[in-house]
Each structure stands twice: as C-alpha cells, then as structure tokens.
Image (cartoon, rainbow, N blue to C red; front, side, top):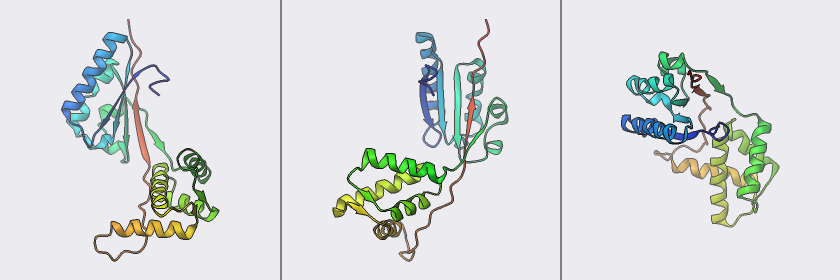
Length: 202
C-alpha cells in the first residue's frame, strides 16, 4: 500500500512499543515530509494494546495529515479504539479465507519453499482443515511439517504422517503430559482500522 501511494512506511507493534516509539515514529514522519514531501503510512499492529493516552497521541498528527494511520486488531474496535480516532476511520473486517484460497496459498508455498516435498491429497485436506481459514496458521503448519520431514529424510507426506507430526508438536506444549488431541483455537476476525489523511488545504 505504501509503495502504491509512494509513501514512507513505518510499522509499530503495540505489544512491544510505548510512548517513546510513537514519538520516534512521528519524528520520522515529520523528517520524511520535510525532506522528500512524501507522506507516511503508519501501521500499528495490535492497536488495542495501546491505552487511551497512547492512542490519543496519534490524533493530532492524523488531523494534520502528517500520517495515514492503519491499526490492526483482533478485538472489536468499537470498544478498543478511542472514539475520536474511530470517528476518523473506516473499519474493515477481514474474513477467514475460503478453502479454495487456502489451497492456492498451499500450492504457492510448496512451489516456492518446499518443492521437494510431495503431499498426498488427504494430507492437503487435513492441513487446510487445521488452518481453519487462517493463512498464517497454514504457513506455520507447513513450516512445522517441513522441518520434521527434513529431520527424518521424508519426501512424501500423507495424512498419517501429518497427524503424527502435529500430535508430537501438540504434546510438546502440553504441560501436564496428558493431552493427546490436537486443539486449535477458533480463528478470530481481524479488524483493520485505516485512518486516511485529509486533503491538504492551501
């Protein structure tokens, strides 16, 4: 998106960042505007982790048009994003991927990252089922399978082998040692809150 609009891109994680990081991002945006006359697209991941004061810090810079603010959250933005910020936003809900889209992602990932592995059709269906519409989860599962297959010198992946790999991984994170079923949480919708800069006035 930043490339399409010839804008500077800055990414901030609300989990790891604080007021200092927000201030530095704004200063970078100001320098970029002064030196190159280019706007800045500021992406904040997990924006609901910022408290009210931290969210308020973006507001004057959004109103001035210094930054285009995009916030991503797995929570309901109506409750987790300041009303003043939200009133200047457009909210988009990202829905789960359809099976066909997951299959396309699977084929692309395999061709680019693991061309030596051959997946049986039942293994593909099992993987996309576990992904539950989540692209990141599917890629994480594929990475897990790839690492296991390389360790064991396996090139053909069927549903039985896939089940064993995923079960071993589930047990590794089972503190009590008594969970033998693979459990995946339901995928939550991701709401993206883009706040667009107002047009410049002369």
